[in-house]
Image 1: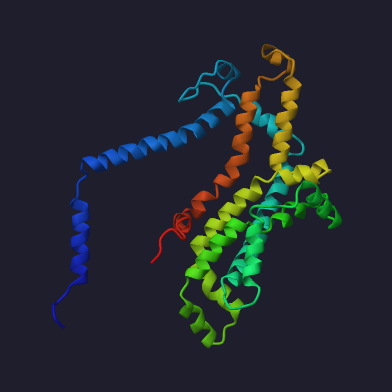
Image 2 (image 1 turned 45 degrees about the horizontal axis):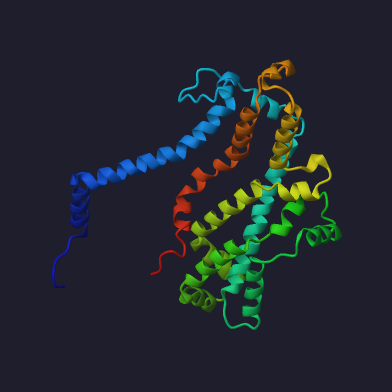
Length: 309
């Protein structure tokens, strides 16, 4: 042994050095810039929330207060008193949970299979998958296909046609290819098959990537409205986003041709701008609640493929 080393002393010295380090002018400037950028990011959301329950006079004058002096929850009452609101929420919740689960199963298993080399037809399958990123069959063939499959007025019509996103699949594929080959080889020597290797070894290592892809898929499924409008003739099966769009459109039609000053004759102080902001809050708030739980994985997952080595 050449030189005596004391790792504990080195760590303590590093801690003392970090604590003793003072902010210099470049650090202060960087912190100030980041604070300004943070405020620029937060203020639009704050403005949306503020306008959603501000009084009608402030909305009419387009006055923005940092601290609201009055509150008017007419927009939220208008949305929550809709008889179909809870049912539409359940529909969207079902599509989000079931759809995200199917998305993850298909994407992860497909990407893991495509990450393997040496089997015939792999390049053709990958080319066919990438082809779907640039071309599709069109709206009429899609509708006829869903009708022939019996998916009209079926909640799975908002799940199965979008079971995999090609871009997310490529991200998973790049991650699986970056794993050491010896990791899987050692597991197969112990008698594990490909399925066991995937679910017992690969997926636990891929938690940051899975959390990131799951968040992206959940946002996509929660915001799903187009397939609901296109394939649902039963109004009770509309997703939440489609229902909110319908409420906003119907209220705009109600006020069409009516002087805004006469809205009080409709026994409401609700203005279209307030309803628009309330729709944004109601539609975005539930999915925003997922971010704190996935934050610890999200910052790692978004960096997948950006750094090598």
